[in-house]
Amino acid sequence: MTKKRWIVLAGMVAACVCLTLAVLALLPPRPGVTPANIERIEDGMTRAEVEKILGGPGESLGSYLAHYPTSPLIIMGGKKYRGASVWRHPHDGTFVAVYFFPDNRVTGRQSAQPETFRQKLCRLLRL
Image (cartoon, rainbow, N blue to C red; front, side, top):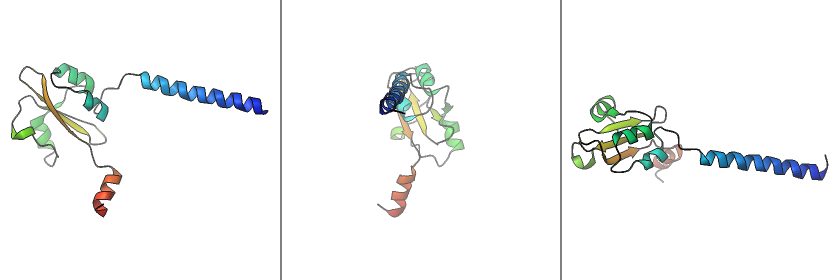
């Protein structure tokens, strides 16, 4: 191959990569328990809006704590919130608890993610 063909081929590959990244960036976020979706939850949203973002109805807070008694979830301010629901990622352990007013509007949220390998290593080495 000549030098000119290599340059054209490299340009075409670079253009394909850029086009693929642009299309992926423009796609709407997928529903589910992800850090990006958790950040999209705002006070005042309805329960239906939260369920659409997180991919379905959540589990009640009471049944969640019964299944996971060692959960790092701490009820906000020691208050008992009626209508609190928990969503959990099925594989990585990320979860979010969303607290609702009686009219099914969000009043707060709390989330946690599992420790990464680096965080565990730093904790074990006391760094």
